[in-house]
Image 1 (cartoon, rainbow, N blue to C red):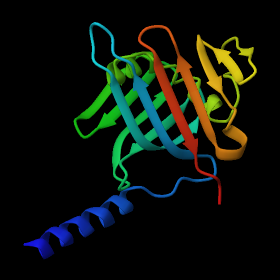
Image 2 (cartoon, rainbow, N blue to C red; image 1 turned 90 degrees about the vertical axis):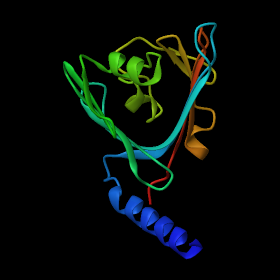
Image 3 (cartoon, one colour; image 1 turned 180 degrees about the vertical axis):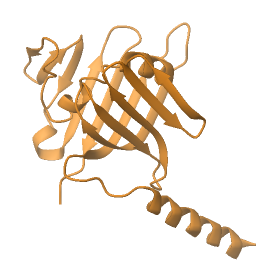
Amino acid sequence: MIRAAWAALLVAVLAGCATTPPPGADWLSGRLQVKVDATAEAPSRSVASAFELRGDGEEGELRLNSPLGTRVATAIWAPGLARLTTSEGERRYANLDELSRDALGETLPLRALPAWLRGQPWAGAESRSTTAGFEQFGWQISLLRFAGEGLLEASRNTPPAVTVRARLEKPE
């Protein structure tokens, strides 16, 4: 019985590794965590995942993977369309704001995420430099540990407070 359980685990690990090819040179990858604080209407929520991202605010793809490498969700966007694919099927949205609100219960500035993960403000909206990095859309983007550790932290303090942490993998 124990031997069968270990064999099943090994098959799952190998299958998980086989489902996620390494991203190409135009992909960013690493670990992503989103934490939404509790409100009177909703409990706190937290999501953590490995990620692979390519593209920009207009067109792109974001893949979220389990620790074993199995694809959990894929978001693909282009002008006028955002699509989320999970094990439950595919859902379509008019834009990334609707997609993030449905998936996470909060609207996150996903259009800006590709630029932020490169340590830059998104060119599609005004930003302001700060001592820690920059501010955009009411979010504070800290780049204090970005150059050395590949760590970016984006936080929004208006209720509910939201924190996004990303640690980029170093290119090999």
